Length: 418
Ligand code: PLP
Image (cartoon, rainbow, N blue to C red; front, side):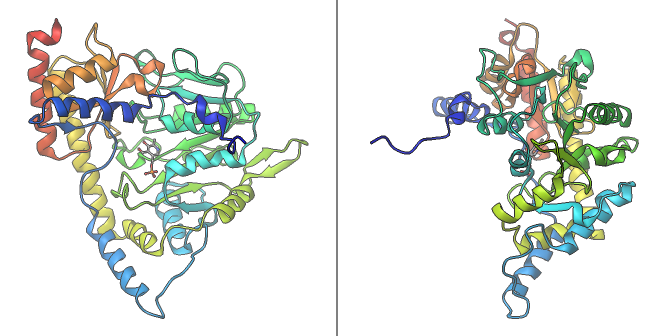
């Protein structure tokens, strides 16, 4: 007899996912050149140690767990109220957003939340993503059977792609017709672009006029430097009626390996059932989390809570300032090398136009072989990312400076322009 059936949607996924292909090329190069001192400015993982405030809080929590009185078993699936209250106060109410603790769901990552959200959304939705895009939004829709097959350019049938390029300032155009679900990410991965209040207002107005739901990924909000820019979609009037927001402790507090994030589902935000009935999304997400998730560890939630202490706030600010100085160095040095650079001012990513006649993977190979620097080809984030290249600011100062020197040398060598 044949074995059990697999989820055929997985077979629609494009074989050469970006990061495995990068790993394959780096491995091949390293094997051929074992002495090459490779510097990685590719994947968006942080490099600086965990803030002291978070470590102290987690150590204290471990000791509590070692006592009968302080032991914690299963916690609330939604997260401990003290953490949800700290988040509501510091991240939202302090910016004038009417988000309450009850509307915050603590989780172990916004990668999983931004994929899992499809559990509570119907099959028939018309979905819009930007191009280029954080690949998780697209692939999770493919896995959930919400798309058709990929075409030769790698675009999936049924998805609406909104191209973001230098010619539109990397801000997505509003869709021409009605879409039901819109993924937005500001500050943006991969382009490093950010949205103004006016731009977000245009999205909120569109969503309310069309009955669309915005899935707003604010994983990089802490990197915003310009005080006039919005950190949350809820800074825009009406967003509570049309948006879910994802946040993470990964990039601000260095929790990529510690794991803590949150999703905001406002009370009163509704969707439509097949019979036309209006259904509150909050109840569905709460039900989903209670059934499929058992919460983030007590220890980690205490670590996340410490981000909001005065020491934690100062330490996170210093981390962000450190990475943003790296981004400024990358922008400055690559501009001096004659490249057009975008982003990197309100986000830890610098988005580079590849030199004329060199495509994204060509530039990847050139930097790898001539500078021993690993970045990310823009085409890996979508067809409209072709001709661009992403460098991340997550590395030591020493490595960033060294990488910039090497790239300048490589680009001024005659071979690079040949
Ligand atoms: N959202 C975006 C846009 C990201 O770039 C990343 C990580 O790189 C995530 C979410 C994932 O965050 P987390 O570590 O909370 O899963």
